Image 1 (cartoon, rainbow, N blue to C red):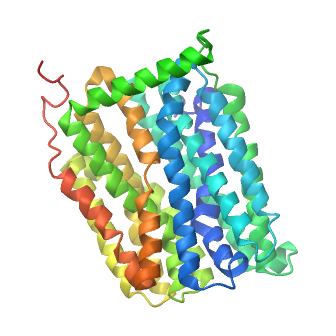
Image 2: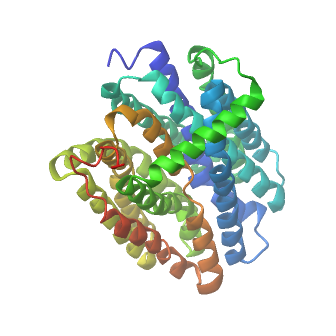
Length: 422
């Protein structure tokens, strides 16, 4: 604990506390509700779902294209923190812009949401990469990474709880109605994100930059990226795992992003949906710790399968729910496994990679995780338009099934981490 509270480590972890407010209040919480009821209220509900799904997929696709390129360049030029701040600034300003969008203006709202999501996800690429500078000792990397996750769950949950209280009791805070409270919540996210980003900006510095020029940094970055891709192709087990992870984590992220919109589309109360999301935040933190212990006893791969099974069961359960109480059960199921499946995926990769290349492969793993959520939201939106909202949620099972099938061929062994034969 003393090491975790060192200024540099705590400053790095506080960025997770800062930006998780965007994930909870904006992505999963109020934006889907407000977009449907305030900015896109006069159109068919299935079109609104399609717009939300397409917007999430577009933002994720842009990150898929840019993240590995920018990550490789930042390694060569030692500008991870600078790029983190640049993307965070874009996300903060765009979130602030949502506070200013008038009723019925669906296109500016969706555009700002896409840009803010781009800033959020782009900054996370460099935040994850800085972990290797914060915890170069492989014995500490999981502890420090877990500390960041913990503060993220807590920070996102705290501000979300305040914002939920504002929306449920707007008069207590001086608002005329819930709509004013929701709009103000976007402002609080921007301020929260900006203020708690100050420590990482002040106390986490990039290593001394190599004076190689931007042109050479870009060229070296592309060459480094090519070398990484060529090497991963020779390691079948690692490649299979990364593909499996990409599919099932896309399912996890899609459930997180689209659950509120799905609940609204089948007629559930927005207050019940927001309260359920708040439950997820506070269940996920202790559950992730317990899940980690479970993974130690039964193995990381089996633990991931357990998490996938719970997600599939939750998805099927979502098809039948008709009340807020049933949605709370769904939220509890998701909260029990959302942190655990991430933690065990990371530890399983540790069993597959060569110990002397841990930093490089964990960086690639994080990029794959952040580049997920391309297919899922679009799949849900398209299915809603074609087959109705209830059937749309079942489409996510395809992602979990694909991930589980690929994971079956991932067999950790003592020889896995050895270089391939010449």
